[in-house]
Length: 334
Image (cartoon, rainbow, N blue to C red; front, side, top):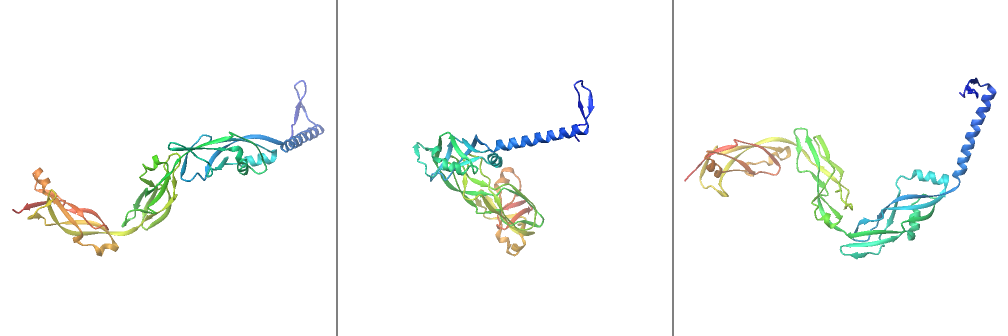
């Protein structure tokens, strides 16, 4: 509702009658329409404005890597009709101008290569990346300077970076693998020489009871210039099987240093090796696939008659859980 009262010169309030209220409403509406029309007229004029754009490079000279861009930002002065210009300017989310550097002429300076690019000669390229309907007036600076080094590549192993838990009796059947297991990495020699592996993004898998095969991204080291990967992601493979416990009895081999003792007796003669084995491999299990050893030198130095035993050889498809007993007595026969 419009104003109910108006103050007079003496500061007292007086009621506004219907006629005065109507005149005030008409005045306000006319003022609003006039303001809108003035704004629309102003927006139809041509305007010049200077904007800043980040410089990016593509199609680098063959076998080179960009290590420095002294002029990473350029100032672009453009002219456009107001309403059209401002609507397009607001819609710009990524103010970037990209330059194709494949045709640059390089000048070698020791281990580096320098080159420059005239922005005045790239007006068409710049204009194509500006909002449609604008006129390019000028670009600053007039010359962009670039510094390159020779790029180096090598094959680097991919390492999985995961945390895994299982729902018993399911376990990982083999080591976690990736496809491919290595990628080609390109970058500065000083960085490439120190690179030993590329990790996948960290992932957590809980309560697993079936195989997993999914794509996962690779983590790029935080270096400048950024490394180039032949692949940005790999397939992560986890093969899961149902396992069961199995017990095999294995005789103990006695050693002194690296030499096997000739004639001896152990008490007991055999130990029990408890292991986890996949159900599909259970029938493959055989005691001859295991080797349990013990070294008498440890007992001689300590004066003890009981010496610990360990499993030195076992099938790749089992996981050794325990040995019973963990220590044995022995008698060397002269």
